[in-house]
Length: 296
Image 1: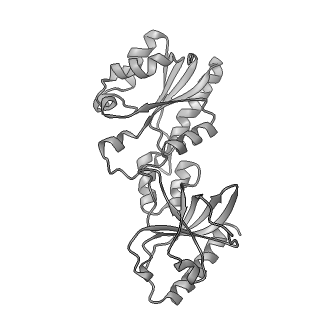
Image 2: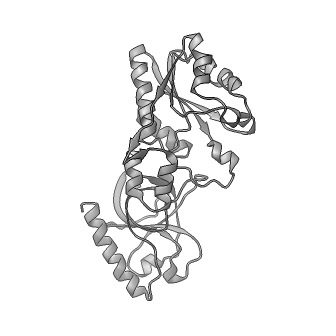
Image 3: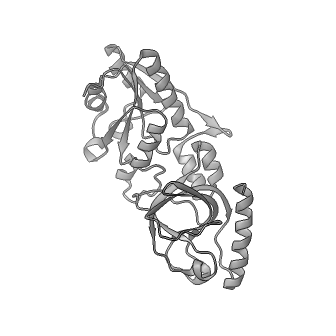
């Protein structure tokens, strides 16, 4: 396939957040000016997943990342399989094996972009290698919001604290989880609040802090407002961590194969109640608050 004429944005792009979108937007602008196409060169798995096998902080697994990139108008996506051989590839060899074969018109990256063995490759090296070949290297300055740079690490920290609204501000959309709907314990149905139970199948996907959330749930082609709980159900001495969503004003006559949850706001931490009746009263309060937040 002839890839020539592409303007390539470089990066891991985990989260495809507002900072990443500045890079993608600049690539699109340059491609439009050159009458070319916009592309991304990214990694799967993330380098951190190879270096730390127990890394469970992925914001956008590959399928989700690709979907978001396509929605943002990216026409070509080049995926570098990040394995041990990739990790130890020297920066010059990386450029020759991964970038030059595409024959790009230009390359766009963030100001702190690093690549190659131990991250020794940087913007200066890219310019040294590419600009003599008439491949322009465009550097996008860091993008800040609320007094700090927008970075994937910052978003992960917000999610691990349950600050899903602030994470959404930095992402430019609600954070989401997708997974398979599985059979639960039936406790929610027993106390009058039936739930769908979600099992996240994407390896390493970050699950926000335990607690109760106002959420939107996509099932097939429909979207439902919901109150969602992440945690161990301490009132009922639960031992495993679960993700359960109670759909508001809706009772599904079937168990759907899968669902996607969009986190809107954290309502409260998960806690143990003295009786099931006390929990029921709190859930009713949670639903009322969720309705206000979701403008129902």
